[in-house]
Image 1 (cartoon, helix red, strand yellow):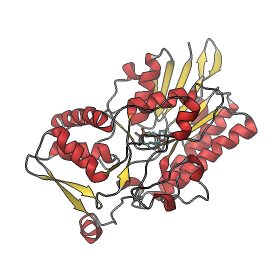
Image 2 (image 1 turned 90 degrees about the vertical axis):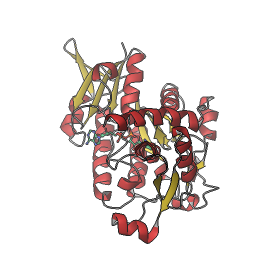
Image 3 (image 1 turned 135 degrees about the vertical axis):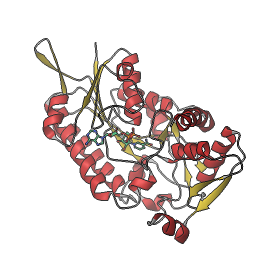
Image 4 (image 1 turned 30 degrees about the horizontal axis):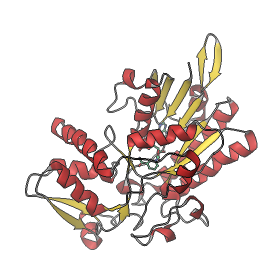
Length: 342
Ligand code: NAD
């Protein structure tokens, strides 16, 4: 039986990934600083769930191999998804910069080192589109996020700088210690069973929550002018893309994993409203009005961002398929129910 380790297995993508790997027949260990996954039942999701702080090198050493029959066995697949992260309200205000950089870098330093030392067979690292330079994402209609546009580096957030550092870290372990790595840059992954409230939720979940909580005839607040563009990839397509990338031998990345269906944030908001069937309006809040209300500048991030999947499709011979609206319907249904149950 093959073994997989999902670090950050208590999170959104980690939970789905562990579940998928278990269904594929892997023996799966999930590790997270959270005591339990908020939404998944552990038996359904993995074979073993460990609560551990991966900033601690001793913990990372302990979880990186499996003891069986008196022997230690390295993992066949390690997925490094653990990170101190959240939506715009968490990573773009500046208030969490030191924690975001320190915590995630510590985790990645420990994981790259121990995976290499204990002979993990292959390691996946989830970087982010936030590492792309701000200068190529100023025009909302024409963002450039092709992989080789990354340098000269100029991410617009410390979160992006840490991701860039850690991409390089894993690739350096590959060059110097033959650690077999795969590095992908995720572009806004969304779906059910993820954070939808509390400040760490991302735009699709926040839209669904706001729409679910608002009564007929009301309005939902959208940060910024709403003209900033993004693309969003549904979790099932993300997992398929990750696993195809992990299970080929020639290409290490970095490669984008995202959708090329670019929409404005107001279009995403309107789509969510339409899915709900309610009659709601959109209230864009920015500038001084925002600052007075929240006490910090409106954290919208870059004006335009879209995945460029040319390289992925060329190397993998496969393209993500699900239209945004189909994924948003599934996500809205789930969050709507969560709101009702809350
Ligand atoms: P998430 O926040 O739901 O999951 C990350 C998990 O890491 C959380 O469960 C958290 O508790 C855990 N973690 C944080 N610090 C830890 C520590 N010290 N020790 C152990 N666990 C710790 O986020 P996600 O959306 O599932 O993202 C997974 C990965 O993908 C992250 O690395 C993220 O940066 C990257 N990514 C995600 C997106 C997206 O749109 N979801 C986009 C780009 C990149």
